[in-house]
Length: 350
Image 1: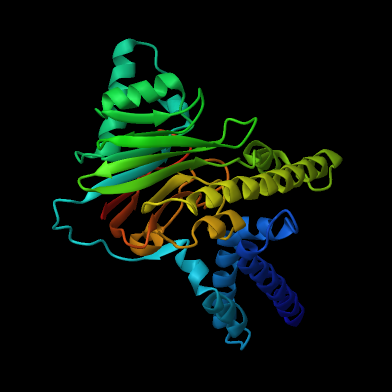
Image 2: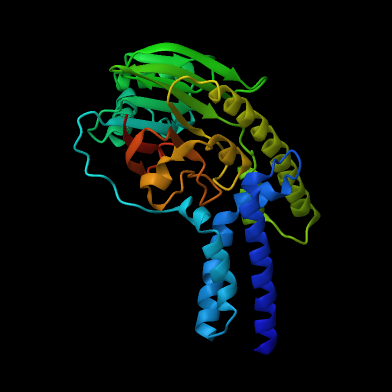
C-alpha cells in the first residue's frame, strides 16, 4: 500500500507540472515552444485528473489533497473557460439580437442515408427547426460551407444579406444591411477570415467570422486509441506523425490569428468575433484574439463548454467574442449530430 501511495504521489506531481504548462500555454507563441500548446489542448483531461486526485487523497485523508486542490484553485480562471457557472438574463428588451456561430461541415450529415428528395427536404427542415427553435436569428456565421450550402442557408433562413468570398470560405448572413465587407486571406488554404460592417438601427458593428487551420489529427488519434499498441513500431510512428502535424499547424494558427488581431486593431466599430478557432481557451490563438474582447461563454455559459463533436472529446474550439460595450444575455451550445461541431448561440444587445 505504501508503494502504491508513493507511485500516486509521483503521478500527482507530474499531473500538476503538466497542468502548469497548460496554464502557461496561452502566453507562449508556439512558433517558439510548441510543446506548451499540446498541454493546453489536453487541459480538460488534466483538470479531470486533478479532480480525481483530490478525491483520492481526500478519501485517504492525506495532506497531499492540497496539491491538486491548490493547482485547481490557482488556475480557477482556466476552469471557468471550460465549465460555466452562470445563469441567463431574463431578457426584457425587444432589441435583443441572436448571434450564432456554427461549423456546419458542408451539411454532410444531412445527406447521410438520404435517398429521396422528400427525405432530404424533411432533414433540411429538421436542421432549420433545430437551429432556430422558433427564434429568429439575426446574425449567422458559418464555417466549412460551399456555394450550394450557403445559398441553401440563405434561402431556408430568409437572410436578405450575405457575405462570402470564395468557394470554400466561411460565410456571414445577416438580417441587417451589410454596408462594407472584406476578407483576410491566409494564403493557399481554404481557411480564411471574413469581416462585414453591419448597420443595426443607428449603430454600426463589425462582425468577423474566422476559420483557422485544424490540427488534422482526429483520424490518427482515433486509430491509435482503438487499434494502437504502444509496443508496436507502427503505433509509435502514428504518434510521432500526429505530434508533427500538431506542431506544424499550431504554429500556422498562431500566424493566422496574428493577421486577424492586426486587422481588428484598426477596426473603427465595436467587434463581434465568431468562428471555429480549432484551438482551446488554453491556447496562444485564443489569448491573442480575446484581448479587449469578452467571451460569451464566460459571461453566460452553463455546464461543460464542449463544442466539438468529433473523435477527440471535451474540446471547446468554437467561440463568440464581443466588444466590452456589448451586453451578453445568454449563451447556449445546442447538442445534435447535424455536424461534427455544435452551434454556439448567444443573445446580445448593443
